[in-house]
Length: 193
Image 1 (cartoon, rainbow, N blue to C red):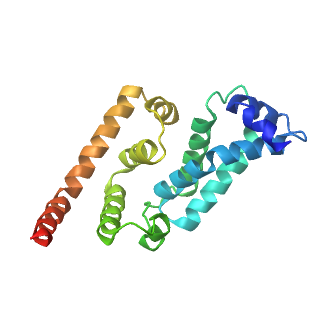
Image 2 (image 1 turned 180 degrees about the vertical axis):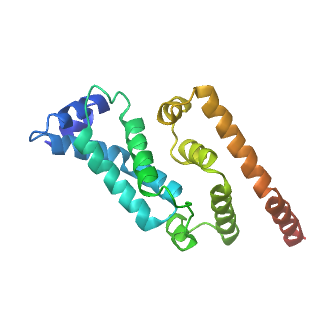
Image 3 (image 1 turned 90 degrees about the vertical axis):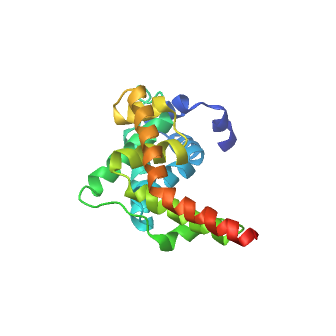
């Protein structure tokens, strides 16, 4: 019976969930299976603390289940990100998000070289140095693979503004990482000799 929900699109599943009947939980499970990984990654990268990100992630899906309505959710993925964003800002208003480097290792694959791990840590630290508007856009686009259209809807800005902010976020990251990249190239050249 579970497999029959795979054939439904997101809007149909949202409609089933909104009816709050015996099928709602199965439809919800299907949407959860589709989007939990990307929403979880978004929560972790934006919040920065694993435990707090878990709380935001769980509350996102609870709120989605409680308030889903097939009229307002033409884009369920974007709606989930909007909920996660709002939950994050409501619970973390006065905290500056940071990434706990002890938890970074959980997200780096075992086969990645030490140099690559070091570079990943530098990138994550650099992302945390961005102000919130650039950090959020960068995470949404690069790590959560949201379209500019979805981002513009979530942040209530124009698509052009979303593209501009993303471009500026990349430029700021390049500026932050430039000294490290030069040092990395110098070390790599010395090792090759």
